[in-house]
Image (tube, rainbow, N blue to C red):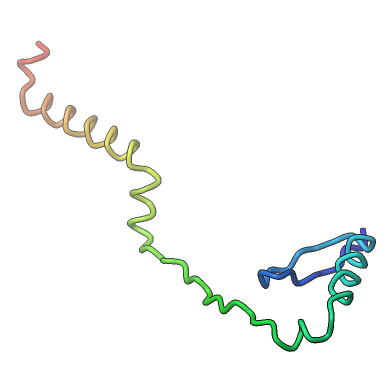
Length: 87
């Protein structure tokens, strides 16, 4: 397709078509030289992702299934301990 990387003002890489890429580059070059000298860049610290343990992730994703299985197991154990409830 011919996409080219372009680093925008926020410091993020955008993939642009060649015609869009040339427009962005030309727009950047049209600014006066003094603007490049005195402009300040925003300092952005990279955000770190919080990594959770595998067990916590599993419980968060499958909490409903875990509750249903627990209820079924408790019911089966209760019925085996008290068979007079059925018969």
